[in-house]
Image (cartoon, rainbow, N blue to C red; front, top):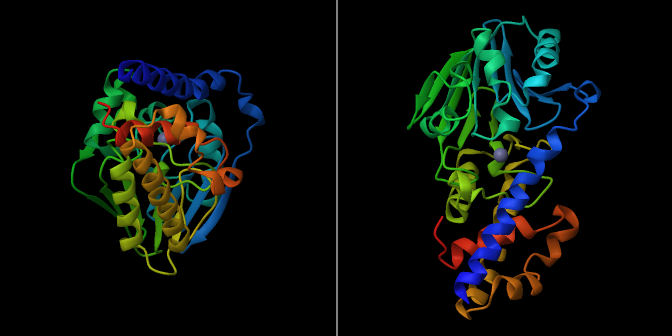
Length: 289
Ligand SMILES: [Zn+2]
């Protein structure tokens, strides 16, 4: 019975993960709206399609956090030129996913220096050309000193993936949390890329510790938020994890856990919880990654 349950859960997770990639091929890239918004100090963020791009803008040039998809690079670069001196010098990848790293190859060929956690390079190395790979990788922290700002990147425990970084723009007091924090959906714990529930909770705790009450938080997807919003997101995960754990301890199947609807009061806000619950159940029931 245990084997059967595992097969169902793994199959479902694979299916759900594959879906967004297939949908990308039908995108009308010219119809994607690109907009840049001021956050605080010298920090802006750019919305297009894919993860929110963080930007430190000033007289020394531009530091980008993530770069969405390759077909958008030209328009993203033009949008950045409109609000800066156009000198894009660095891009930091918050993690490996293609909606955050898809512009790497174009930017790398333009001479932009790409930085990321060691594991981002390892995971990208098999499937992207050399120009798309981070040239400067770190396992501890990296700080770029530009525009009178410290752009401080630091790794967090395996959360959304095993190569997640948070980026703190210390002068402007803005934090970019990549996809560990999102305001538009339940957390995505990508176990295929090393993500974990435990790490997600710990990483969000780190964000709460680094942020102050006035810190602006850029999520991987969604709107600029506060430390309080991150705390509420973490608390939701803790409540759901507690509920699922209690059912796992009673040896309930995934189907039974899903039927108990442990995310009930958040479903309206965050939508379908299946992918989240699948990952939480898998980790708490001790399935191998
Ligand atoms: Zn992601």
